[in-house]
Image 1: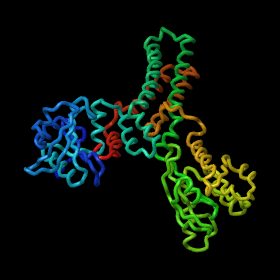
Image 2: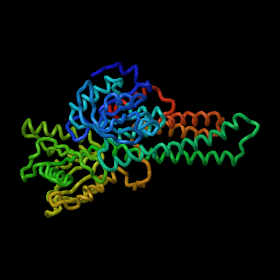
Image 3: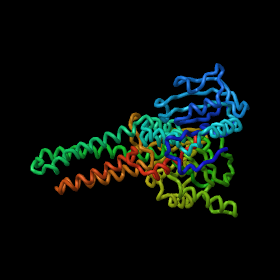
Image 4: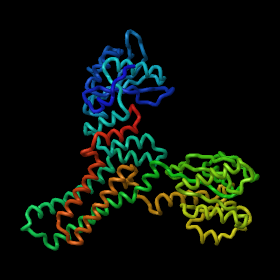
Length: 467
């Protein structure tokens, strides 16, 4: 395989790049993708079509059956797809060679195109070229990795909506409102003899409030957006034999943990990813919190407490058939600074627990039977309420999920607040104008205007090589 110094070539759009664009491993189909000015010419030298048609003579959006032949050897039977510039993913000539999905065939075909003039693509370089060539903005480019990594249908929908430009439209709307205010302010600064009348100042104040409300609405969605993107870490904790493993099985809707009447069956933490109403939940079933009797139980309890400390949310279980005891109160103390949903389990048995005490301690208490799978939906609803803070999300509203975007929006929010204070305190208009100009810089960063190469490198380093 040919190797080159990629750091010197990363933004050289005159190069033709290539990479394997499908996951490594056995599969029915694998794809080697080429993009750049010589993509068609390079494949001309390798592709032997059934009717002798060369890729460079093919129409755009056409597929052709043939073979890849290199150094007189047939490497594989393929379907070759031609997408001509500018109507392609990168706005360059793109060729995709669809071959059999074995790693040997893919590697041989990739080696052959590299030896004929391509260079190896860097991580995310196809999407980077789509951004640099103006097909998508940076927010849309970053959505690609979110789509690839989506853990639930809801996370996928958020990524797709951002790729379609949903977030960009919201940012442009805020940006345009900001620019409209700046036009008025700059005009007054340039022509000070035209003093702004009280009604003009009131109009600016109203317009600024509208723009701030739009930005705040976006930021309000950040918590839910981050959870849909990255998931939420939930730990199930409680004394031995309160039904933690039964609850995990009920949420999974399958038997994952061993359930017996013997206390302390679970000796180690068991972790699973669950899709609960579109929310990716990384849920951990821990060993019962008790006074350890041996080294194994001591280690298990230590791990359980570690998971509790690192979790986003703790589900603490109580046995409805038992009265609260000293161990229960110790456990409640251990989670008092955490986000907690209290669960009274085994409601199918005769009740002994003092429920009123739990309702005084915890904001959210759910009563259910994990063994009978009764009221599990109430716990799922409580998890959703925690994520969305009890607010129903309009399906067409854009969620902000990218940490870089959230950081930029927060900086812009501070500057909007400063501008409002400057206006209320009747400071010189230059103060107000500068705050708004600085805020516009952060909005432009989200869209990818005037970015440094180092930041682009960091963003696209998270991508796989073939995307």
